[in-house]
Image 1 (cartoon, rainbow, N blue to C red):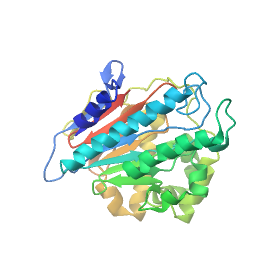
Image 2 (cartoon, helix red, strand yellow):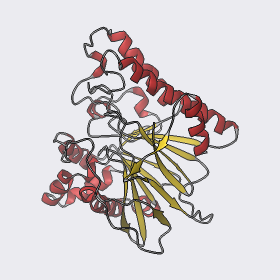
Image 3 (cartoon, helix red, strand yellow):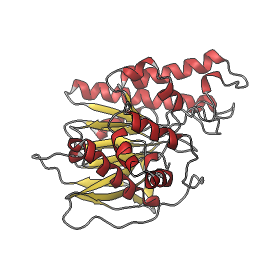
Length: 334
């Protein structure tokens, strides 16, 4: 199924390649077990942070006047190719699920629909966003996670956000075995706040299971209204971490541990276990964004290793995405 996605991207004029770190592909592999699959019969396409409207030189819609349209059209062509792949897979009786990991827009810095862009009109910008939303929602049935820049989406949700859990702090696939959320909950700040108020770990864990938990919402506001705590460089290295212990079902060429986020993820999921044990017992793979640094890390929970796949971003000249299917999770760059 991953091949169908890559083939459609090539037909659309793209040249997708594997994301590498130190010349090694960022790829997670495991031996499928029919009795306990990690992923069911579907494929999952994961879109990381987009930060639409951030005003940067390589923003999809707001690049310089010479390339802004090209960036916009490029993302539309990408989504159109994915929609074609989904149609082909559906005709074959197979499934493709799409999830966007948060920070879809960048409304902390600007609300892009009303930005005064030289040579562009409000209607042209809004129409461009409308086409993107139509591809993501109407054709790809995308599920969205809440990121730390998604203030407007949470405080004034659009109509589409209320349909079938389309917008939530976390999204789950494959009977809960694939667990996706933005990842800012693993920042130093979250650990600091939780250290001051021990019950916040439970609130944060509960926030990952529902967007309407009052205690979780209160903690999210504290996190959301603070500065990001990871370094601001966009090409920062990803330190090497320990590999999984022998005998686990997962193997990868590259393992990493950025700012000890896996340790914080583990605390959050232990807190979630206290409030929603069935949720954490099902998890076999965690997918996050936020850091804009693609890589793999891991932590142990109960009797199993939980890999964390950081999908990177679609910003600052990068166009990264992940494809997950049974036996393999790989990162790609256009």
